[in-house]
Image (cartoon, one colour):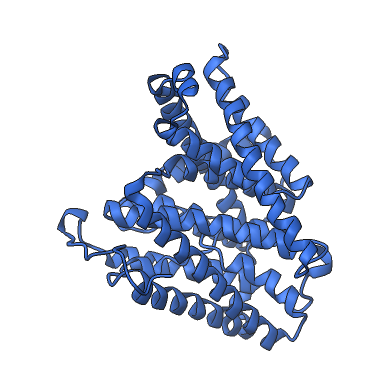
Length: 409
């Protein structure tokens, strides 16, 4: 294997960043998610390397590190996009129940499929099913530019809720003890503690941003957020709740009615911090997302294409994901389900959680090609939906979506 020089490595890194910006530009015209282009770019680089008998070993820990850091940035970015107000109650309610119900039914069906085909422990099958049931916000959210504002808001909320619900469920079912009164009590208590901590730490972080005179305060905040996240994981707390509440608190500062807070930190002082934080977060998540999906695509072994079990099991799982989403959106949310029914991509969260499955819970007969197949296929399905969604937002007559319904959960 040819040894890379520092100059060659810099050329590769900068070229990947430039390529990612190019993908972001052309994705708006061809309606293919830029993340999918990055993923296929990594697959192409792997194919080209294999063709020339050159392969650079990518340490799994590097991909996992990028994934975890990218997840924190994406969740923070989602929190900074979520606006809470009374007139959005139905939208938030519908998107939450959509994420919850679709996740639960999808996880149940995937568990049944894995149990039937692999014949292994049902709890272990469920642990594998949970990551595969989470909608990828890292793919959905950057791909919504051509949708109407109402569809866009619904998808942002739903993808964000799906991340949080899935990660909470994964943390619970990978714990030492599950499905007991003690474990449920501990799990519920950890959520309450996380919410309280998130409010306290959010104010502390905001005071640091508002009062410090240093110009490096925003990356100091990111370091503190990563430290909070990793410390929460060590203490078995759902620390992503802290991250998203911090983002939501900054984005909804005007709704805080506590007088001393409004006097100490008026909205005119918060607004520039919010805008700069949003900008830096978007840039950081773009960079992390770029290298994560390129490296993950490069790590995919293309020989899974020739394995019938991968097509059979992966195809059944993808079909289950699509049918569940289509039926729920059609009968429980609103009648106009295009292109939202196609939004079933699995990506960064799914991959990161797969890396975190405990050794004792791993399925011995699970083929990793199934994971690659599902990620690639669900991303292609979303791309098909976006390509055929040709109308401009101004030309679309929305139906009475998200209206009050008697049959709503």
